[in-house]
Length: 74
Figure 1 (cartoon, rainbow, N blue to C red):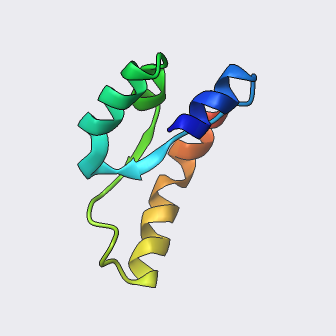
Figure 2: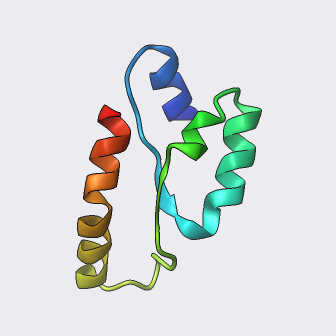
């Protein structure tokens, strides 16, 4: 998230993609870093990630793709 804040403050658009398990943590950290919109405009994919197979990860990516594009071009 620190990198996203750095990019955003330099005018480089970003979007955070995270597991749905980390919504509350992302909200707290983005607020603490002064850019709460990073969490509210983030794209959250279904948890878990760690044990997902390659095929499951590709499916998560396909399902999130349009939301990621919308968030970054918004």
